[in-house]
Length: 504
Image (cartoon, rainbow, N blue to C red; front, top):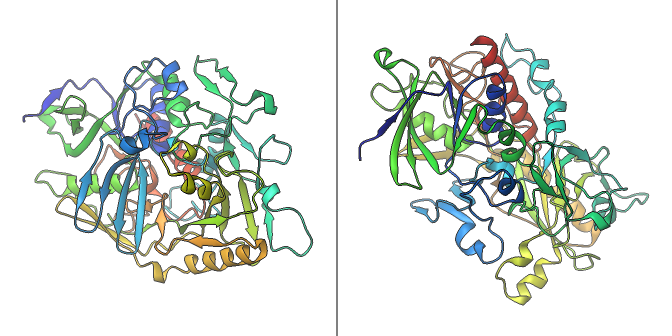
């Protein structure tokens, strides 16, 4: 089917709408640029999105909708299965590591735990490029936290259960509530009586205070958990920014000077089942760490495609993510009654890692047999994040991304497993960790570097050898953040987008 060439009415095309895409689109639209956001996933049916007047919406995978809308696609060793273009999660199984990514307008922010933490290394951005001042990125941390309404969890919040109820203060204990706690982008009710109450922002976006019965990795139906679709896109929607959901980009191609220069972005409109092409002077890749690499590989392999990127696929990692279940038969409150995260804790002797946990709010709506629901109510989701080395590499063959990852060489996993054994022994409640790492925080592959041999993007986020093409998502991170990466990605996107406006 021939492609439909659309008028070049946009200054910038942003591919993807997670933290990297939405923040960049917001900043550029506020600067007077016309921005098109192409997102392969749908708008989700949340209260904030309904209040924005978005008509075409897809449900979160609660209740029976989990059968049809939990999974978008499965990518196993030898086969890929496309299940539902409006599914929420895409699962990749690679040798040594598995990856789970979310698909929606708002990207991973629709499914994250709401945690906003700076990278564990204070010098995370140092010495990455001779012309990069780390303060130019770090200055955005506080702004992002304020934009997202981040608050630090404390003992005084009216939570049904928290890190303080599960880790009571006691002399001689090795596991303690972390101090300080991370910021959480969550509308915590001022009092228990206000749980579920609706509030309206100055922009007319409606949200509900957390009622501790959802807002999990299945999505926040009432908008208690802040996501970038209504935090960053809502203020500029129709005011410089246009969002086209269910549009999956397949190729980025340099446009000929006679055609106006810039780039041609080829995409499939999954709703109308048509193909389209749009041209823009500048393009931002923010499709998520895996999909950004896939698009760069595909676009560089075409005749007349992108210029070669020698460092593409190098320095890839899974952030040392290790997921586990904490079996607490003696828990006083069901794990279904919980905020998305109950807080962070430390384990003496393992301070180099980040540890946190939460319940399973909303999973009680799934079509599970009674015994499974009763078992799940006594289990809590644990995570350890230790950061990994970036030794892994990515490549592409036959249109598929391939990851070469050796978890056995990553010391972080052994350290986290040892720490979880300490927790199990001290709490008297068994902790079961996944044998094969499953990450929701892949990073790298199109890293910031000092030159084209050391990285894919420069200090401005621009791809070496491909002027006007930028990367603002986790693929550009130069190392593992060692904690949730959302804040680092959002700050980087601010930095790149603001630099673009100054250089225009």
